[in-house]
Length: 297
Image (cartoon, rainbow, N blue to C red; front, side, top):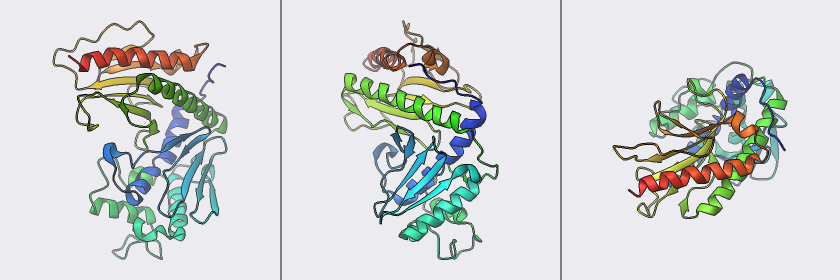
């Protein structure tokens, strides 16, 4: 089965990224820190993504086929948001209100009226971001402006649903890749800051799985501003030797050398393959083997 054409992807990816970005501050506020920042990402599902389990047992589900964000509360009831009827700001405020009503207001830093006593008006988003900043949990990617945009989240569901299928197909291929590689690896997850799917492999010389030490990252990004407007498969190693000479690749991967260095395969190359999952699996294996040899030098 061929992969779909992602119609109007630049506009659609921006809107979907706005929705996905809301998971980051919620995870930062509610979940305990884990090594490799694994308290931050989302889990991949067939039609979209879902949060990690929140305190009290709730979860947030993002269904790209339906255009919905659903909070399943700890008690079992649900609150559904059609994100196409919202801006990023109004969706975030509605979701935070629902989380507050599910008993998580204190952890999120939102009071009964929807704000901290220190004065952020009626903006629960401002209260949450302010709390994270004061606790030094915001990081360099989170800003209030980045989670309170006011453009309507109007996206074609055909494109959104198609990307969910693409994402799950790549997830499946990389799961097969992980089964062939073995060793110490992180789960295959999606990061809210960049909306990219990835897994990280650590060589035996890095038994503590320290992300500041040697590792190889393999993933699938929906875009990179100023570099790639369409999705792409990527793999890179860290650290490269001072005299790194990118090895030849027999697959359709090319070496990217501007700003960061790694192997890349564009979505259109993946989509035209008769068996795209096997293609992604094989490319990931080839590049991984070349990069792991580099780390062993």
